[in-house]
Each structure stands twice: as structure tokens, then as C-alpha cells.
Length: 216
Image (tube, rainbow, N blue to C red; front, side):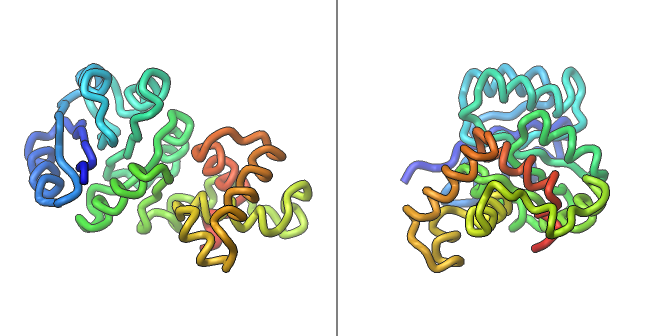
């Protein structure tokens, strides 16, 4: 089994080394490159094309936001997992706009970081569980009422989109809703077409605007 290839972009050497030891201790992942500033993170990612980039938000040269946006344009196949101590909702908003696939806190348990890496590598988005309620609370202002639910998608399509936004795989959604994987895929495709969504990150943005990520 091939390992998940991870690049660590972190300007603090001690933190970087600690994360490297943690990742390399996992049987299914390895650190293939490192960067201590944003510009180096961009160039090395473009060179080695890792599966996941752990992107510190605050770095010299280019910020994590700028580096994420650049990589989203030049290496869209590479997943970017933002790593920060900040719980401020403004950071999440900026990173979502820049194209980040996930957001995890440095102070969270190691298991949270490892899970986040695996989730984004599998093609889903990830929000640190410690942040979901606090960071997203009030993120979009007033909560939409039930009557404001998008009328052009069915309730089952809405359920599927919500679960996708929360990072569940098609198989997990199928089991949760007691339907087939093909049915999940059909609901997802229909909802994305109706709402003119083109990617998983579009689904997460839409979920944020609807207040869905505060419900679970």
C-alpha cells in the first residue's frame, strides 16, 4: 500500500520536527518535504506534488492564505490542510475562499491532525471538531429558518450535501441514510447541478452560508 505523501509548511522548526516525527510514525503516511516559509512551500509543493500540504497560516515570505490560493490554482490535485492556533472565524473564511480543504488547530490532540490528513487526502473537507461550534457560530450572521431551506433541492439531496460538507464519504453517507452508494452519488450530482456547485469546496461554502455546519 502506498503511503500518503505529506509536505509540512511551518516556520517554527521545533513544531515542524514534532509533526514530522508524528507523521512518519504512521504506517500509512510519510513526510516527503518541508518548508519554513510560504514561497518555499509553493515551490516545493509544485516540485514534489505531495498528497497533502500541512499549511501554517502565519509564515514569512507568503502567508498561508497566499500560498494556499496559489497552490489551488497551480496544483489543484494537492490537498491543503491549514494548521493554526487561531480560532477566529475570519481565518476560516479566508482559507475557505483561498481553497483550503481543511482547518485544524495546532493545540488539538495528535489524533485530530492525523484524522484530518486522512480525510482531506481521501477527497473530503475537514473542520477541527473543537472549532465547529465556536468558529462557525455566527459566521454567516442570522441563522436561516427552516422555511428558507433551498426549495429547488429535495430533502434527501440536502441531507447528502450536509453529510458531504461534514466530511463523510459516499460509503458512510449510504450507511447513515440506509441507501446505496449509487443513490448517494445520484443525489449529490443532482443537487450540485441544481445549485451550480462544481466541487466539494463549493459544497462546504454553500453549507457555511446555509448554517448547516452548526447543526450536527
